Length: 85
Image (cartoon, rainbow, N blue to C red; front, side, top):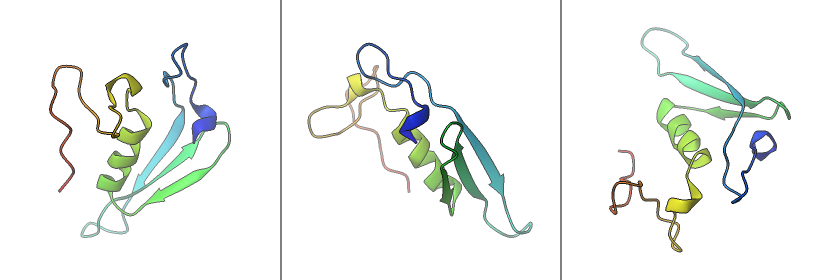
């Protein structure tokens, strides 16, 4: 979905345009999601909200806070982000 992201002068993304759809097949079923890129119309599907959140977080990582091993760090903390459980 990089076609909708616009890098700034440092090459970091500053804008991502997408349509997020959420649904479930019944009151006792899990939520599902899809993300559609606005310009390319590419659609990605997700079996759970957790998978959607992981994808969205990956799309919005601030490159200034990624070390050479690929670990992300929040600007106010030196501890790496914890994985979802």
